[in-house]
Structure formats: C-alpha cells, structure tokens
Length: 149
Image 1 (cartoon, one colour):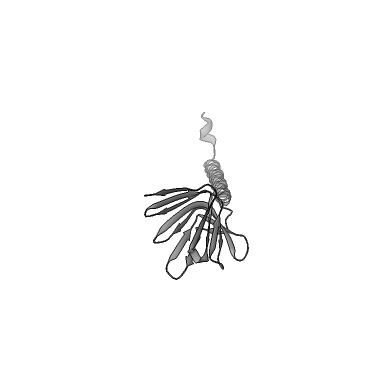
Image 2 (spheres, rainbow, N blue to C red; image 1 turned 90 degrees about the vertical axis):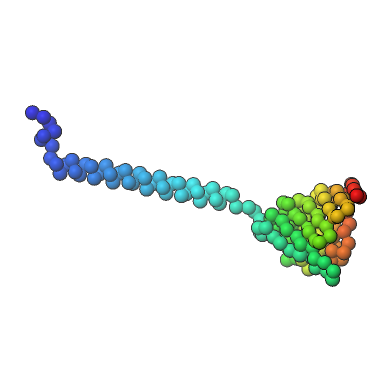
C-alpha cells in the first residue's frame, strides 16, 4: 500500500499553514531590516549645516546685493559662515566664491577664498574680498587679476 494514503488530511493542512506563517514572518523581518537600512542611510546623509540654502541681502540706498549659498553655519548671533557655491548678485555685478563670513547687523561680508567678480566690462579674480559700507565698497585681497573689456 501507498504511505500517502495513510496520512491524515488535517496534518497536511496544518503543515501547509505552518509553512505559510514561517514564510510571512521571514518576509516581515526582511521589510523591517530594509526600513532600518533606509533610516540609517538618510541619517548619514544629513549635512552639518545650521541653514540649508541660505538667502540674504545687503541693502543700501541705491541697490540690493542678494547673497545665496548651499550651506550656512552660525558663528555667533550676528555672523554666519556661508559655504559652498556662495554667490553675490546685484543688477551691476556678481561675485562667486566658496566661503564667506556674513555679518547681518553690519551688512558686511568677508572671504579669504578664491573669488571671481564679474560685471558688464570687468572681471576680477582675487584671493578674497571684503564688502563693507552696505555694499558700496568692495576691497579685493591677495593676488588679483583684472580683465577690462
């Protein structure tokens, strides 16, 4: 006689249900592990910046100079270190650099990294700059190259 004819149908049913439960438990644990990995990856990718994509402006009587960057960190209550792709733009000129210390109260900005000033007929490449007097004065530091057109 065949051995399978003697097996109880209830035993086969319970064995099938047990295998399905184990299968679902394994899938559930895999999903939980994948979610933990996603959370760890997203926590590690957070920047160490206080401000993400900061935007400021220096105002004076005749013009506004808009300042943008990728990151910003507070140095104290008034000063902010702007980092990565810092741009100063007005109707007359633009300045691009990597790091700038911006003082919100005094409306000044200072950089000691390579900077490029561009206007309609002038390009200045320098080792840094200082913007003071509400944007009316820009002083370039270090080796500076001026191209006049």
